[in-house]
Amino acid sequence: MVSVDKVEELTGIDFYSELDDVLEEKLEAEINPGKWNFNLTFQSKTYSSSVSSQCKGMTKSTGNRCRNNTTNSNGYCYLHKDQSPDYKKPQSSNYVGRCNATTKKGTRCKRNASAGLKFCWQHK
Ligand SMILES: [Zn+2]
Ligand SMILES: [Zn+2]
Image (cartoon, rainbow, N blue to C red; front, top):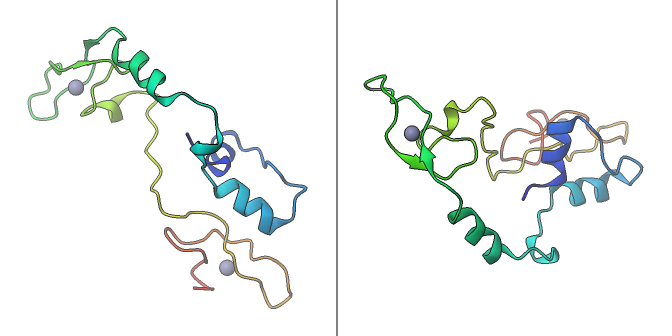
């Protein structure tokens, strides 16, 4: 489950662009699993019963094929999932988004906020 911000990052689409920026920012940064009707218990059961296969990764120390079995759909174990061609670095839980400051002109600052902060380098 990801925030709308994450989907925007992946798709390049600006969702809710007609909304007021303050509201837009809030909606896009929110992840609220409790508001969805997903049956998470059922999903994890499905995943654990899927077929396991040998990890396609290479061990860095020996250069040999990894011997771990994995049920990951990309075919890489947890140690080597970053070797998968479609691997995406997990986003840090820190807030990353547009700077929340207002400029002297009264418009919203267009810089990206520094990692973990709500403001850019100039407004922190
Ligand atoms: Zn592996
Ligand atoms: Zn700023």
